[in-house]
Length: 243
Image (cartoon, rainbow, N blue to C red; front, side, top):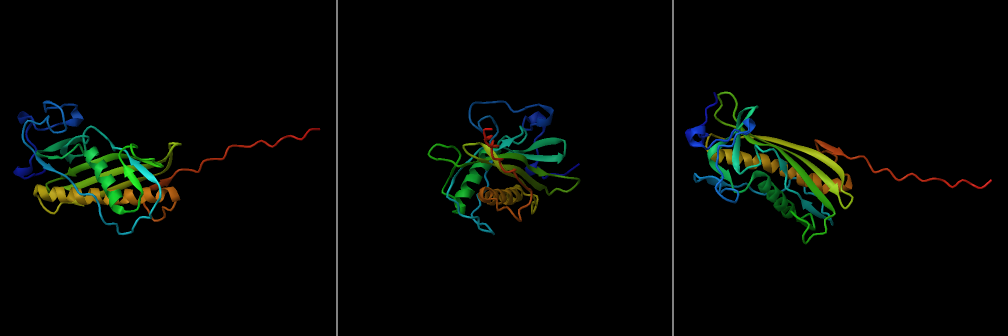
């Protein structure tokens, strides 16, 4: 069985701190509104950082973008920090949580990263105050610390699928899969958070560059990218000359 340091160990179900999402059981009682108010035991709160530098500067664009909150499965659509000791079970670190549900936190970090790029006129989470030309839809498929075998040091896995949608037609023009793994430097929880930051940061950088380049079709050199087929022009009928 994988060894996890006591300071990071998942609490036993009898202490009501462990969710077993794949079994459909929720052992944490609700205690009011808000993201974290449902947890009766005080938690250490953590957040991750938006990206501020890009190795290959993205192109400057003159259009506006709305970034939707990522879709995520119930196991990671939570403020708890997920871990996995096998491919079939999701658990959570006992005394730690993100400052927001993971999809909402990722949405904010993506928006901040677009703004930090200095390459886009306007970007936000809603169309209020914007006249969006494009919509970014994403799925958060992996967002957990993986412990395997007897290794006490986890590998963080972050995977997202991104789709750029042209407005107002709401037509997908391109999609991509961004996938990154990052090994923690040690067994401390701060090492785990650093690895989450590295893995998610790499994914967000790919999505920012992909999104800013997708409308122009200049996606050469990017991995995991699929362009939508061009729209077919409506068929025209030649007039039949009168006999």
